[in-house]
Length: 117
Image 1 (cartoon, rainbow, N blue to C red):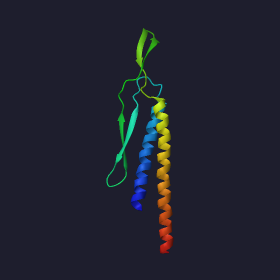
Image 2 (cartoon, rainbow, N blue to C red; image 1 turned 45 degrees about the vertical axis):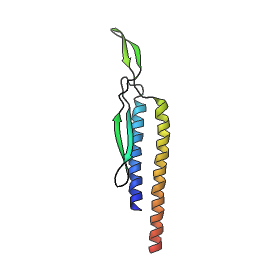
Image 3 (spheres, one colour; image 1 turned 180 degrees about the vertical axis):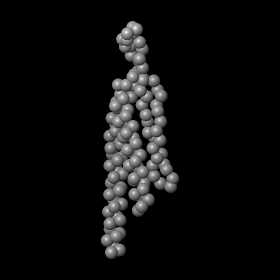
Image 4 (spheres, rainbow, N blue to C red; image 1 turned 120 degrees about the horizontal axis):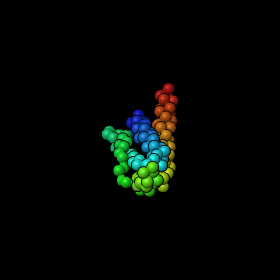
């Protein structure tokens, strides 16, 4: 039962990292030249989840902007809100599933202690 609790806790931490990354990407949606981040979840031995962060270096769109020296091509952010919003929804459900696992382990431990008492 403890291993299930540890797995769920590591899952909560990993999803928390994904949520932070999504929030950072959305906050910098209109920042010129910003490169979005991506969090990849992987297995951690003997059980659990590990969050690996990486920058996505694909170029953003270019836009012509007026400056004091005339016109200049400016690279915009490579963040796509159409990708970030569904990922945030999926993170919410993953977070809820890990919380439910913790609740279940807590109930099982309570039943075990009641049985032994």
